[in-house]
Image (cartoon, rainbow, N blue to C red; front, top):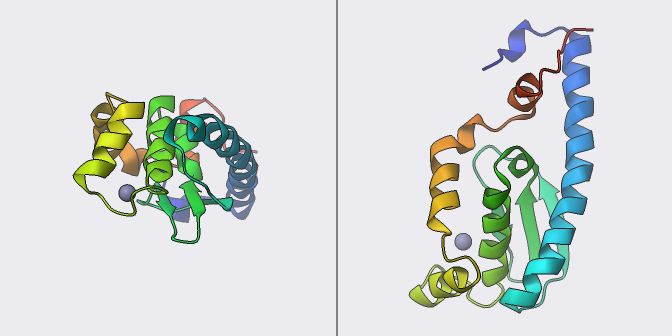
Length: 140
Ligand SMILES: [Zn+2]
């Protein structure tokens, strides 16, 4: 874990630039995933928004706005797919009923695995951690 307090203004700006780039990338990735999975889940959505949140991976509002957390880019791709499928299934079932989970399982039979991964490791996903893992130094 990187302590933000120990970073210089230049390093913080660098993180911010990376973050903005990943946010843009995430928008494209989620749009493509939604386009693919909605053929399997059905339902209709209005728009897709990308957010930066600590613990929330996605949401689906009653007016059909799908929101996704850009940090999912740093998770195994299966996790990203799971969240997309999860939110798309909410277009049909606005709850976590048995019917909802059955629908998720129809599209992704092993959804419990990525769900558990996010529960166990979700808090480790950040742009700083990702850059570190890639060996990208924040020092300029
Ligand atoms: Zn849900």
